[in-house]
Figure 1 (tube, rainbow, N blue to C red):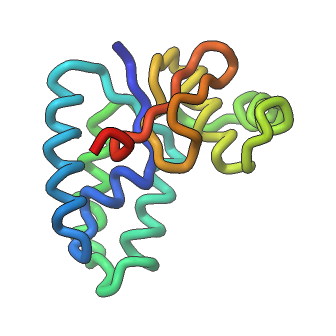
Figure 2 (cartoon, rainbow, N blue to C red):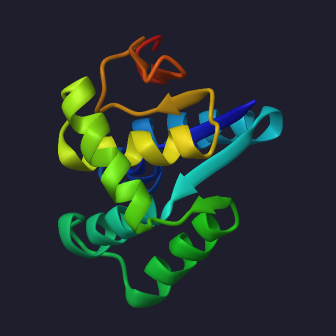
Length: 140
């Protein structure tokens, strides 16, 4: 199965301020990677970099940020392009999503993912009739 993982979950994995959550996500990601194909988008990489260098206190060093981004780049990465932006605009309207959530969802749909893992969408929601949203913390 193909699964898309939103940036918030990658950020929890690296958040030193929340060690319990970081351990949970680390274990969950290892299990997921052993059973499924993980997909992300360029947006996920951009958002993670922003969190690591701006929101985290202390911020990640340039070297540690590069290591984290390289780790993400090892997965399948969906590039953002004009048609995806246009389709995400339509998806935002149809599904009443925020702009950035619509871009994430459109990347997951375009890459034929079955599940979108995120905290930013309603758990159990179905997007576009093809994509199930799951919050991995929902069952914890």
